Amino acid sequence: MILLGPALKAMIVKGRLTVIDSNGKRHEFCGSAPGSSLTLHFHRHSLPIRLALRPDLALGEAYMDGSLTIENGDIFHAMAFLMDNAERSGGFRLRRWGRSLNFWMMRRLQQRNAIPAARRGPMSPITMIYPAVCTNCFWTPTGNTAALITCPKTKA
Image (tube, rainbow, N blue to C red):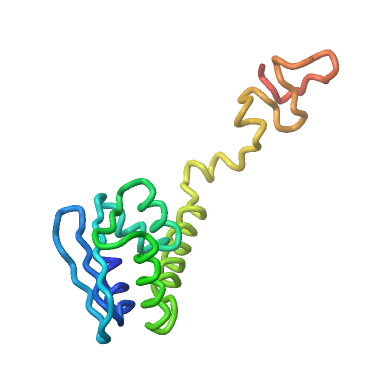
């Protein structure tokens, strides 16, 4: 709830949201305006992080796989409650915050270039499938060698 708690506190302006985490601890988020109440029960430890990073995708997935249950109401009541509060709080801050955090984390993973991999150089898709392929002429020891000239760089 470290990532999700502050975002929900800023988002809930009408009604009352109760979140029961996977340890059984209750977290209350009350808005300044009166409204309906909603209770969400998280059954997995990773769900608050997933909701903070991708709330638009994670909410539906969690409901469908059973890691999120709605105690008083159904999915339509929960969506109406959350969308109404997101609209009243001045925009979809949680969604924008989650996307920017997700973009930052994924960019760091995609641009990771470990020193051993950088020293090996780029790998072509052919050498990943056939390790004995020469990258200069695509000669393979298992292929049709009559049609291809043997490359002198290949030791096979």
